[in-house]
Length: 433
Ligand SMILES: [Zn+2]
Image (cartoon, rainbow, N blue to C red; front, top):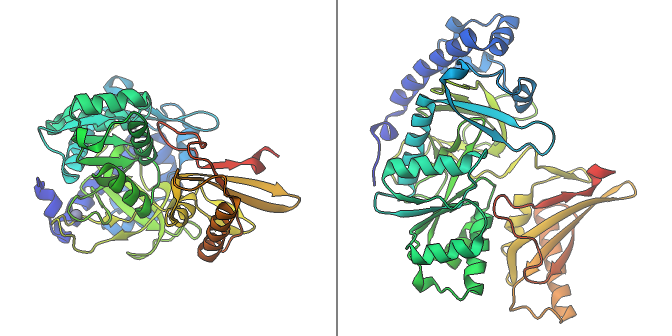
């Protein structure tokens, strides 16, 4: 295990680093980004007012719509000729969110991704098949640079072309797979169809992220692929993958790189900080990024932070699994529902596969939720009684866990569309009405 010195610093040492860098970033954005200067001036905030870490609570939040309003380069803190890379996140509606990187930013990102992969047990000598999408999305290139920096051999496969993924995995002796968790399952399925047995693969680990997934999903992937499945977190606005990652030894929360990012958890309604261990929205201030530093950026991701001791020796704060995004939250007859909560219920049921879709619609004034779940091929699909019993059981469990009435419809194996990137879990027909 390779541990950077900074990863085992005491809390006091970490806080000192964070405070110095926080002062730097506040001054950096105040001097260079008109958006921040105006925001701070409006409330009379000057960079020298930041004297302690707690003073960050006086600083206004930044949101995704601020990035959109300043499209494309209005939030940049450097001249365009200092930018060496531009990424953008796919907006489902309207313009994408654009981020830029200086040479130092790219170096820092590669370094953090190398640390993240090392934390997942990857090292020089590994053959890493990168099935995250390459392109405007940060996943592909983010992992790529980190893996090279670490000294692993990278196969830049990108997403899709699943039969070829399996072929190369077998022929090249891939030891590490990186992609979304849902795509990992898709690869397993195609490998089975191709008659490729586990014994012909050298896979030992997978680093999975870019969509929320549950502990049950981890179990499923680890059993099917016989690997360690490690959760990684990041978002393009903040950097891309590598903001936080689990360690192989603990697999219990994601170590967040506090020497580069200052995390807070807030109550998304009251916008007040909550205590360690309490769930809320993750807010991040970048501490070292030059091109597009963000101050108190509201990620919309719901999680917890804790400062408990970890078996791996890292002392940084750990994030809980992302349980959902405030953006993804469905309100069904007044009840808040996250797709990941449904996932954790259905993956406890024998006989179903981790492929599901939520169809939300309206029946007169009332919201309806249909949950489509695939059965596996051991369930006799023509025995209606068996299916009905399973459906009622899942409906009962969803009601019990979430307090919401859902209609469960079991569907045949392989009937839900597979995705090579982020899976489409929700079809909300109410939006079209
Ligand atoms: Zn750890």
